[in-house]
Amino acid sequence: MSLKNNLSGRIALVTAAAGAGIGQATARLLAESGADVVVTDLDPGRTERVAGQIAEATGRRVIGRPLNVVDEDAIAALVAEIHAEWGAIDILVNNAGTSEPAPVWDTPTDSWRRVIDICLTGHFLTMKAVLPRMMERRAGSIVNIASIEAWSSTTPGNTAYHAAKAGVLALTRSTAKQVAPHGVRVNGVAPGLVPNPFLNRMLDPEDLERHASLIPLGRPVDPEEIADAVLFLAGDGSTSITGETINVSGGAYMRA
Ligand SMILES: NC(=O)c1ccc[n+]([C@@H]2O[C@H](COP(=O)([O-])OP(=O)(O)OC[C@H]3O[C@@H](n4cnc5c(N)ncnc54)[C@H](O)[C@@H]3O)[C@@H](O)[C@H]2O)c1
Image (cartoon, rainbow, N blue to C red; front, side):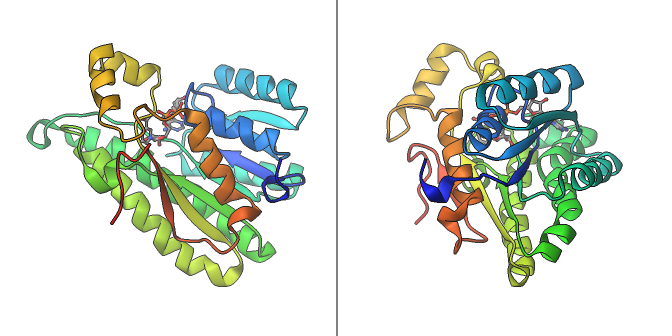
């Protein structure tokens, strides 16, 4: 492990970290890199189980707590609990996201609100809860998971998701500017295609292959490769980077 990726002594909170994708890979890599980690997700049993598996594999202090990222009171209670028990939160990874594709004219307004809430408002609520103490300590690194769809809006009918993820880019920049004078950094990672059980259900193997063939590096991205970028932004290898969102997409989206 490079010294700059050594997170020993740091405490990380990761949302939506008990699924099969980016969140769990990130929680695991942060723990492997020396951080103590709070794994959160919707289902208490699954969250507890994944936290236990990561603790056993890494020997770090890893706990699981149920958390719905749209529940402001629950976020406040969990952040208070971590501060009381562990003293601080050094790293926050906002990973929760969802999509409910439908044409704009056929999108129920409560579906629009749900996607915006989970993908965008959730990131805002967790940052709002952790920032006062991070700024007081002049220490903290936040990584918001966006999507290359924020730039390219290619998947059909994913309007609320596109809008929410574009919002994550702006939320990241805006917050980064406000907290930079207080010694806190805020960055983003925009994944490309990262296969997971949900995507595997939505796309048949031929569709997946067709999508993958359009990726310049010729294959989808592994969740672990997104976690690598999160680790870089969370740790001391990126101490002069803030307000940035890094695309990790095999070249599927390249910014000019
Ligand atoms: N998979 C991709 O191709 C891809 C591409 C671009 C961006 N992303 C983004 O990456 C992030 C992770 O996606 P993933 O596909 O790797 O899945 P993941 O396994 O990391 O996350 C899925 C988890 O999110 C949890 N979740 C859903 N709603 C929640 C809520 N309200 N509060 C807390 N947890 C909630 C689910 O319970 C599930 O366990 C998301 O923000 C997604 O939009 C994914």
